Length: 279
Image (tube, rainbow, N blue to C red; front, top):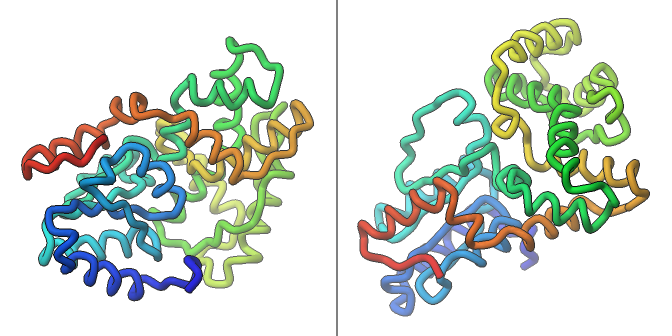
C-alpha cells in the first residue's frame, strides 16, 4: 500500500500491533503529524530507544490517536503544531501531547537566523546584514493570509486554503492582492459562512490592531511558498517548495532543537519515566 493511501484507521491498527509486540517493550513511540516531521525529528530522537511515526488526518487525529493508545501503552507522546494556540494564550492540556514553540515547525526553522541565512546565501547574492529584513518583509507581505487563517479558525468559517497566492504577492508594497486572493478562496469554499469581502476585511483590520507575534501568526507552508516566489523574483532561482523545506530541515541541527521548549518539555517527560529518547 502506498503511504498516501494509508488511512487513520490503518495506522491505528498498525500501531496497536506494534505496541503489543514483545520486541517493542520499553520502546518510546513519538507520533507526529506528517512525513516531513518524521524526516526532521528522526535526526534528534534516539532511534534505538524510540520509533517516530506519522498519523494521517492532521492534528486532531493525532490527538485522538495518542489519547486512545496511552491507555494501553504509556511510553507514547505526540508532537503537533501549535498553530494559533500560543497566539490565543490557550492552555493546552491534551495528555502526552506537546506543542511547537511557534506556529509550526517550519516557522521554528525559519526563525533561526543561521538556518535562514544558509538558504539565502545558497540562492542569492544578498548580503547577510539584509537577511533578517528579507525574512521580515516576506512575513509582512503575507500577513493578511495569516489573519484570514486565524479568522477562519476562530469563527469556523470553512474556507479552503488550497488556492495559490504566489502571483498575487508584491514584495515592493509588502502585501498581496487580497481581494483577488479572497475570490480564489471562495471559489474553492462552497460551505464558506462569510462571503462578503468588506466584512472579512473589517474583521482582519480588527485583528491587526492586536499586533500579534508574526512568528505565531504565520503558517510555515505559506511562508515557504512566499519565499520561493521571492527567490524567483530576486535571483531568477526556480526552486520547489519541497526543496526549500528540505534545505531548511538539513540546516537545522540538534543544537538548534535543544534551545526549544518542545525539547525541554519532551525531555522532562522522558526523564520522569526514566526513558532516554534523545541521541
